[in-house]
Length: 43
Image (cartoon, rainbow, N blue to C red):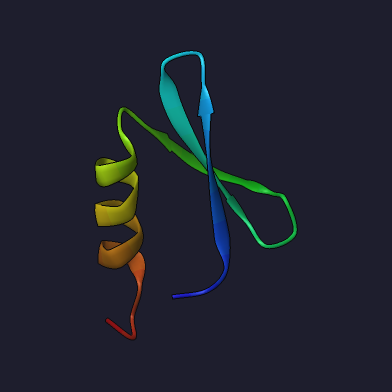
């Protein structure tokens, strides 16, 4: 899994890549982590 950051924003989380580009939003951190695992071809 590449580098990323998860930020809480107004009751949901937003996921950004290592360069600060927005990737997607999710309702919870757990959902975001699950989505990141699902999109990781190395997983």
